[in-house]
Length: 79
Image 1 (cartoon, one colour):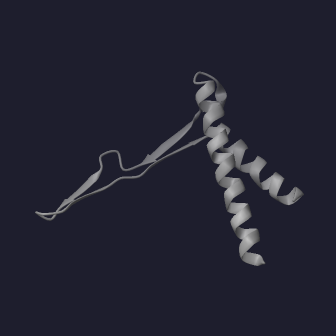
Image 2 (tube, one colour):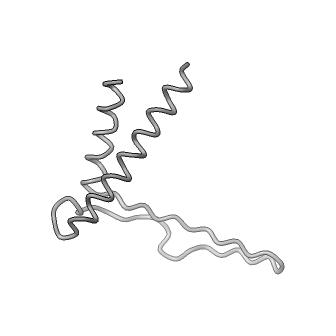
């Protein structure tokens, strides 16, 4: 039972991040899209001759995504 609650919470937080990012992209010049981007600016490439692997991760945290996370947690508490 606990695993289902944890999965539900993570899915609601993920949905809040996605919806917050969408709202932030709708208003690119507003305060909702203010935030910080961090991660690997250039991807790390591992070339093994017959296999080439590319690693990269960039995370952009905006005010809208933080609001989305808080809304996801609030919805989870209402369930």
